[in-house]
Length: 131
Image (cartoon, rainbow, N blue to C red):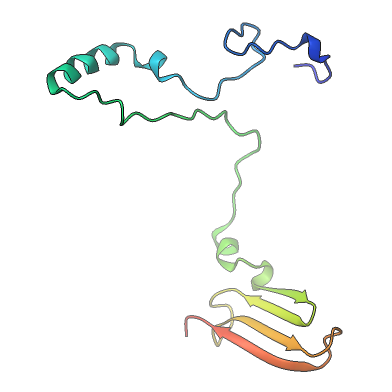
């Protein structure tokens, strides 16, 4: 497909497209049924219900362009690079630790400061898990 093309040359009739410029996304259930539709009509007549409420739209997505993402189990469990991560805010420092990486079970430590330069500690809060 051309990258640059005048808008006048693009055909926007997607239903009767023979050029192959457009891809479908939703599958038309009527086209896929075929012989099954005739069998279902016979069964519906016998049962007496229409069966239209249970039908769903099927989404047919094109395959992804990017390669499949793979993350090692150990890295996913840690959730932090090297098992710990520090985030600084205005008067606060938050340290995150992966589960079971600290001996005492520490998972988060929040340090509150009185000044913006974070020199005078006001309060330290520690959160533990799996103790």
